[in-house]
Amino acid sequence: MKTKRIPFLLTVVIIAFTFLNVSCKKNKNDAPMPDPVVTGVQLTNNTKFGTIITDNLGQSLYFFADDVDGTSACNGQCLTFWPIFYKDNLTIGAGANAADFGVITRADGLKQNTFRGWPLYYFKNDASAGDTNGDGVDSTWFIGKTDYTVMMGHKQLVGEDGAQYKSNGTAGTEISRYITDPGGRTLYLFTRDTYKTNKFSTNDPAHDGNWPIDSVKAIASIPSILDKTQFELITVFGTTQLVYKGRPLYHFGKDARLRGNTKGVSFPTPGLAIWKIINSTTAPLTQ
Image (cartoon, rainbow, N blue to C red; front, side):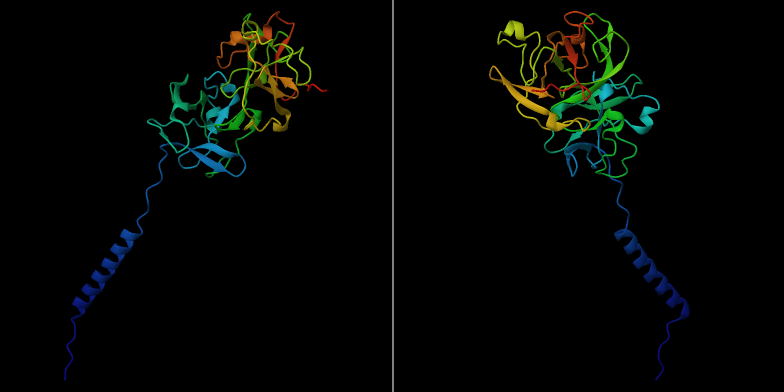
């Protein structure tokens, strides 16, 4: 009995078709996924800093102390290391408040997203989601967080008299580092206070309104260049006041709660330095 042979050409065609069919199915199943897209921001848990602000892919975002007045001071070469973060129609992840995010137009014409007035940046040396290598750089860059009790400013101090001042309260040119509230509003110490004791407030609104106390309910996150254990709370006429290194902290009424204002450094008399900015180098008060 003779067996039927499949012609050689037909065999080749069958093999080729089978290979092509398998290949097509494999390519369809193994097609590369599109690259993830940055669309907005989210709150991300970080093992070192707790909850931080990131883009929706988990890449860390930062605040810059030089931006204390709400204007981006990172330009030119700075942007090589600290690229600006901007997305139109920003998406907001769970737990974040859309009202906290805004947009500024920079001096170079570019737009930049902000958080409570702080322009947002990436850091070039963060290779992967979860990296926070930019925090603390030059003591002016800080990981973005929603719960800072205080923040840092880094600017030339300008008094109510329009003159420039140094951090020690004397007239002169100097870029000073100083503590602000989370919204960039300058905090001051009163040189006549004693250890954890407010010597200014009298419970008279007309008087106390000149130098309102910095009132916070609790101490949460603190910029990494400061020692959190040096912050405490005292009670002044039924209201809690933030204390740093034993020194009660105040706002200046004539700063008008505007971020970046430092008018109090020349009040009441220029050069007398009764009211001063405060930072990590400020001498502590002791009992």
